[in-house]
Image 1 (spheres, one colour):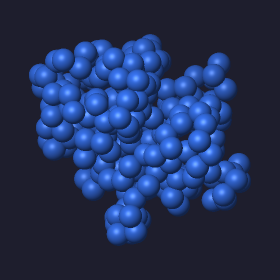
Image 2: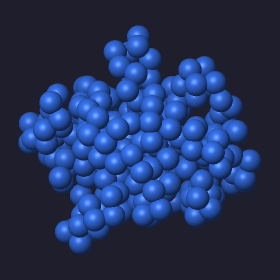
Image 3: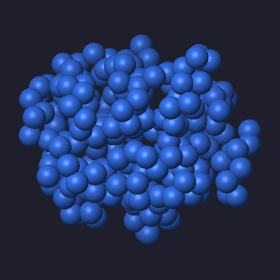
Length: 231
């Protein structure tokens, strides 16, 4: 098993993800520069956080139009798991792999802080090691994390069980105060219709070891690895 971690100019969470996969979980992982187009050797893909191309035009817009994303799209169509974290989530929406869009935070400033998330579904390759309703602590670090979709798209996400995580308070309640960016329905992460593509704004790689204050994010990567192993 080898998982590819895509690097764009401006990616800055790639090495964190590499550490979690290789050193904490113990699977093969490889950094992949955005100019490469052959991804057939990978069983899964991570599009990490950062500020690809300085967030010019829109966050993730330029990275979404690089040739490597056509290869990522092909792997996703084959059913292989793809996760986009923070800027990676933005890239996935900009490239059409996920619905909706990420816009400027309701209060337009960069926010870097712990958040509580509620696990909304375990029927994905990324959440199978959770129980539905689990409340987990995973930090955010973004200025453009405000999830937006039209009413029809929102209804489809809800009806198809595609909302993976929601911002909540420490007791698991959905509140306006728990929403750090104004995302509709407090949405923190969604999956594709086939469930094999996940986008989330919080950073699970920053919550994968006790020394960081939380290991809750580790289960996302462990779920992904377990899914790949079962194929």
